[in-house]
Length: 399
Length: 43
Image 1 (cartoon, rainbow over the protein chains, first blue to last red):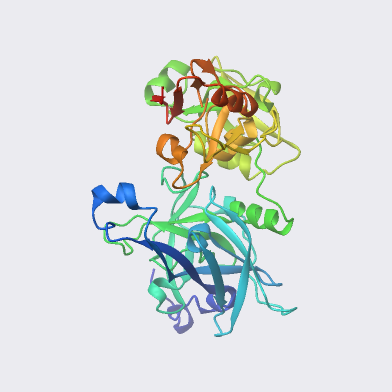
Image 2 (image 1 turned 60 degrees about the horizontal axis):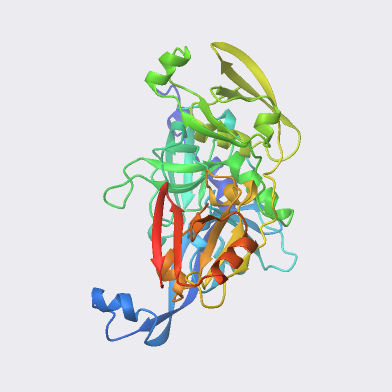
């Protein structure tokens, strides 16, 4: 289309950018880490025996990411991977006007790869960005990415929504990414993806790249998930997720034929916990869940996302295909039960598991650790480095 | 933990008892990533 006037020719995203830019920040993390230095550390063979020996030496590790102010009292959301690491972290947030504030972590959620920070700003009010409803996004919508790539300074890039509901990216447990061709590079992590109203549609989180730089395939966590995590942080808790109590598998082309589906889609129930909300709602092994409250579910990850973003409380209607017939199941949105109580214990004494922290396996623990087995049994939650257990049973193990 | 000396592990308290009741070492079975690891220690 040929522009018909001078005004039409001079199109610009500037009004949208002006609205959102003050709410996008840089997140600096400075961390003191202790490292043992031993003359044997360069030798892979001796490393196995001497990694816990040698003189501890402290050094400072710095990292950089982006963040978005989503609450005018100084609530910032960023990626968990921006602030995560061992050792004590000092976090500084730099605003687009150059002011800097120390920040504290109020919630870290590695399952969504989101973290929420609070600026230590003594009653100061900040420009924040409002959440958009990410479910109303469509492929082809124009979006802008704002962040601090490579630490060069605040940068705005433009693109479109290239795809929605990307569930096979492999970087967090709840995958339902917005894919965009707006250039996203290292340092953009935690930054904003905004729509043409200047509202937050996603948090830029990952890229697909063979070189490390942008190839026009970036992924953002949808704002509806971000909103849920921020709400949990402000309510002072952890992110509580509804529990289905069922094991799911994707529907392949072959399965779709067998199940009488026109195309491979949905989440097939292949195991069900008799005490779980799914079973209580009447869900059965062999059912294929095709929708949640009318929103299509293309695979098990999409079902998990839909349930998680409903939050706890109330019900959701699952559209199910059973024996070739469509029907609805009303699921209560309740968290996984912590039965039996976890009874966490650090094993001591002269046993091969000394140094292992173990707990009773319950649906809540299984959900937390993303285990298929919901109990009963005992799970290794953590292993102290350098102990007998670390040599025998390092990692998680379940009954 | 799957088993200690052939006995199925069902609770933390029972695991502590099983580990302390050894006479000549331990036989452990641990489930990890869909596989069962068998370990014989001591004895």
